[in-house]
Image (tube, rainbow, N blue to C red; front, side, top):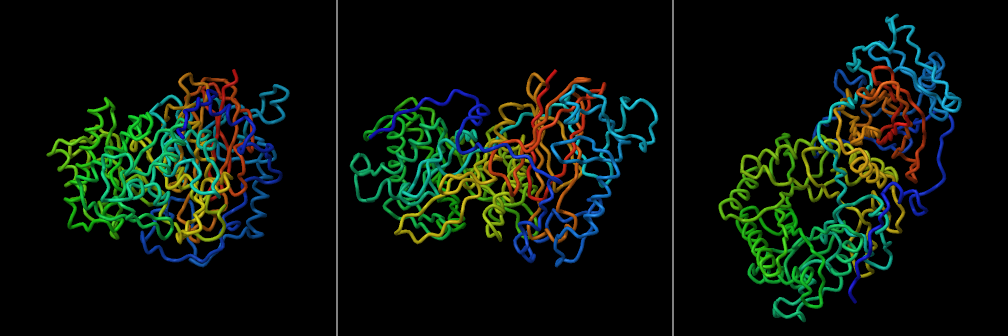
Length: 623
């Protein structure tokens, strides 16, 4: 039975999320001091050395405002710290009242945010409230321009709304489709649509029933006969992606004839391509089934094909046979060319999905040698083969993700491929065996993912996080699958899922990426503004590697200011805060406030962010 296309929901993503469904719950406002859950709430595991990466780049430096302690030190809120916090909050007037939460930076010498509307004045229209500047050393008009440099040792983030440095991409593509793979799986179509997932990579990781090994189960069969193919499983997965209005990235993986291994942690292993010509013919006919109706097929207009999956990391090919892999890529390119010529299609080829990782000395190399990547690029150039996007994989910390992407980009430019899109078709953090609860793992990965996508803006054109769906395995399977960081098998969104919504909102509502700076490596900032200048989004993510946490004595909560300049003068803005933290169960705002810019068009947003937490401020101009 063929799947019929459905009409995409014409409502905007934000309005769709306002409807009833799995994302909605009652508005949550916190009582008492805010953002003080602290790392100790969900982390109480002794630190162990990082044998994979060595010393972390997140270790606190001399200017980080933090002091180091012994590795065994934990993170309790001591009585002395609580007393100091109480005295601090009581000694200085609240800068902004956000629900019942108060935060105030006493040092205002570096910046004067101008009048700010509190919760009470928002009701009465009184805009006379302003921060205490009695100790700032400036006795003149507080509306005068001042030095906006980041104060030493203070968490202060600057955004210039008048300087656009690029555009914002959601980088929200995922590995794994929305369709249920087994009886215990939930249909994730609505969640994918609400999160604005643009592209889905399949089928590696979904089980052997979905790869070429099962699509073409008998190597001795006639590759030109429809009877030689088993399309039921892959059609169900591919059809769900297309019907949801998403774009598929289909992997030509692996070989034919039920030769795949489906093993530990739901990882696939295939074998080397034994008959490249036969393999190419089978790929050609699978694409004809997808796009040209062959073998009772469809007209899905599948546009992207990727070759294999980590051929040197999946025990398929030894590195000494790298030329064999280049010929496999050529076979895919030739199959795509035949389909395009026969049908008038414009299918594109993605190469080459292998990891790029730093070695033990921190040098960035491709599978321990950059010559492997360079040789592949030379082969493509010499043989005049199509390559419409270049893909790499990485499982690293956020700044390492960024540096790796820059190194790959550099090699592409040197090889003459600087104008093609750079994709990461499989990525996440390297810490896969994390302690404690699935909720804790979700917020940990959520903040790590937010940092990585922030640092990849303007470098990586598309990224596919591993992985979007959760599988319930069939009874006969012996594989062990870890739980999802994003959506549980029953369809329940985990905290990290809401990060997809945040990046989707920024890409759609505030696509103009603004100049933004931070004095904290462990907290990243991404800011965007709408084309009309009336909507502003700011995203902060606080993350460190969990094995380094004992070095951060005061890492429970990090007070901050987001200081925005370049807005229209004396304007009023509503600001809503959404978070990804241990208590996140919906996309509802946790707080809301009204702010007023000064005559120079500046305002300040105060807050305090927990470790492994993401803050998303959405501001709308009201006058």
